[in-house]
Image (cartoon, rainbow, N blue to C red; front, top):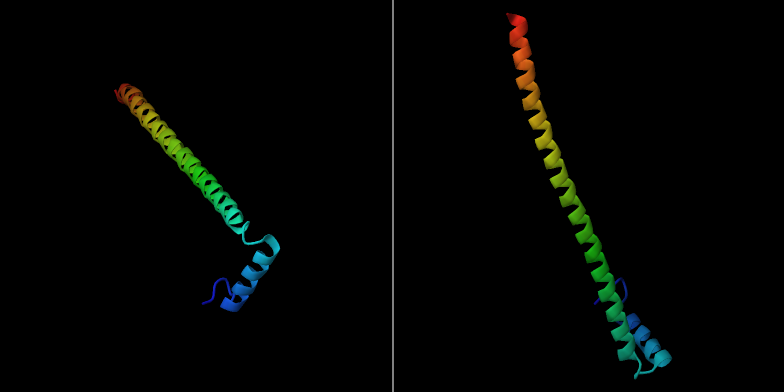
Length: 90
């Protein structure tokens, strides 16, 4: 089995060194701390993604409102210019 281009023997050697340095009783605490850190990192990236998505939704709603206002202004301008054009053609 290769994990990150490391063979089984190399993984075993790294685990052996970790046990020798930290001791068998502290490894579960270290693993728990690493797990919490990874979870916090995942939560932070999810929050960032959610904020980006929310800001994109807000921008979309804003542009829809602007387009509606522009179309209303165009309709009003057509009504005004239509009556002026009719008066000029007489």
